[in-house]
Every structure is written in structure tokens, then in C-alpha cells.
Image 1: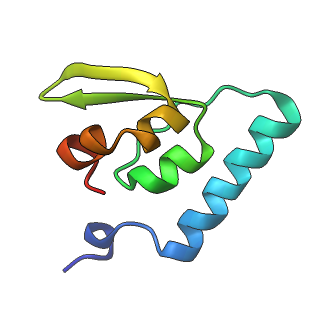
Image 2: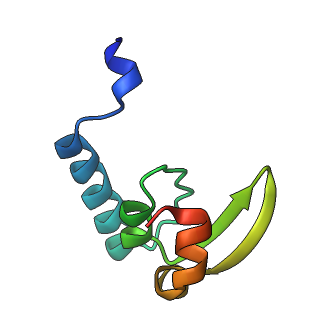
Length: 78
């Protein structure tokens, strides 16, 4: 298995997410983040868009997406 098949090391991912959070908080910078780890992505996001088969299922605040148990189970995997 190639290293690229394993994705980023968890520590590197955490550092990148912390940097994005810091940039957002300090500068108001807008960032488009496409991430498979939904929990991590929602931890730094203000808003999220859920896609299924290329179509928008829902768009809402990150907090509302985290709090919607049916949506999480159906689309987000947690």
C-alpha cells in the first residue's frame, strides 16, 4: 500500500485543522474544505453542505448538522 492511500497522519491533520481555525478566527478568511472526516470538518466549519451522488442533500450550520441525528446516521457516518 502506498502512503498516499492512507491519507495524512492524524497529527498532521490536527495541525492543519488548528491552522484553519486560527486563520478563520484571526482574519475572517473564508475556506472551502472538502474532508472525509466529517467530525473534524464540522469542528472548524461555520456551515456545511451534504452531498449525495453529486446532489445537495442539505445545507445548514455546522452545529445543526452535528445535532441532526437522522442526517448524521444517514449521510455522515456518525
